[in-house]
Image (tube, rainbow, N blue to C red; front, side, top):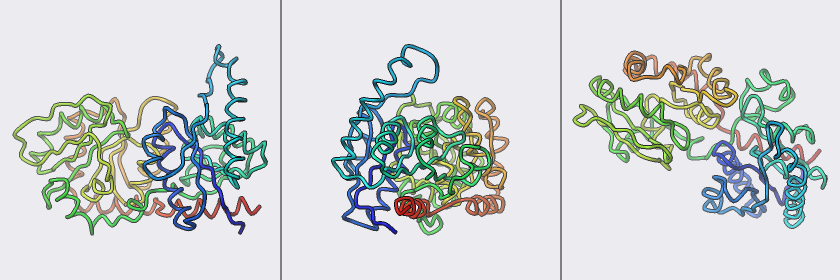
Length: 368
């Protein structure tokens, strides 16, 4: 296989694009400490908070979101795209890029265009159905398309020929042994070592529906002997948790060491973003999924295969209430046998080696 001396990784805006990009960058560096890795982003995306601290070169390009309807912005798109493509081409030339690997987000569009004009191999990694706008455009310029989940090629005609590689995950999560780290995790998070534990979180910024319902069920949960670890989210107003509860109910804004939350938990109540589904499947953790109800319903499609495989439950955002949690989550969290069966089912669906599989796919693409 052909060696890759310089790889440009494009993806930004949200954690669903940035986290797999970083995990893949770590994989490339593990195999070749001397490889040059250049990441593309915009000044406003989450990539600015995550990529430089991880030790990778982040270059800003003047990318713009593609308009989804006829408007004045549509008329501005061609000159904007031309400027972004030229700026990105200059980066590819400067770093002598051997390959461009895109994870989506509008910063990927000029990367795909610049790589196509430069005749640089393009690899696309997609985790959603239907594919995002940027990756749909990129698929016009390459057949090297990889996906994170087995259901994607079946549900989206555009992905029919894609390679299922899994989702690149951080090693601390992909290699997590929950049972071996449970005691350590619960001690670190100030939780009881022996109680059934529910881990509650929304997306990376939180989810108010999930927060309100869980807080409303706090007394019922703890009266049933279930302790709770609840991440409120950095951009959500905190909800009030009752005092005098009969079991621990720990609240945090954010947890950087998500692997500790997973290790401490017996069951999760969460949104169903692609990264969340991939991480829970990799570590074999059953969940109650509350898909984000807006956008194009991709979170329903993310969770449905896991639920159908027996690894979780699904509830509509509009139906999630404190009473629903009392009637459904409490019995499940107390049923050790059922949780073990669900954990085995979700683990059978998961991939722990998405980073390695994507690297092999990239090397094949470059060799071709």
